[in-house]
Length: 196
Image: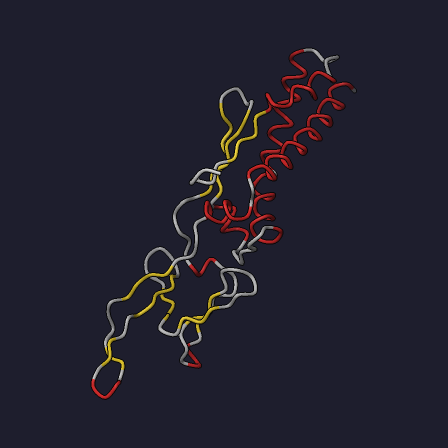
């Protein structure tokens, strides 16, 4: 997979399925291909979300809506293929389920980026500057008698990007095979509908 989380499903690779259904008029076959590709494309984000959030090698604890928002599906040219890209910008830690402030106990922030691996950031805190809630970490300096003093510098903490999560979990071949199988099913359904 490329650095931007690139997956390509090309319907030209599935000519054998199209040969079987050669009874259709060319316009009917073209329409059936378009319908099948669009139905497959609509389910792509959900398929990637399932791999990244649950069935992948590293299940991330990211909220499904945020993950899907970071995936772009673009149909290219004459509707013969589409491209899936993952956002390469790192995601805020507050987009991961289970991120919470431990202010009452004085411990900082608790974060669970990977499912089952909770991490406490002792010098962390959550604030809402312009652009939404963010997790920051304060760097303390040792003062007199070992006391920690100072407020700055602070650093914004982020998790991995959608592209990185896709690369680590959704192997291009596995996802391509599952999408190709779904395309074949959708194409058969569209052709059955056209032959009615």
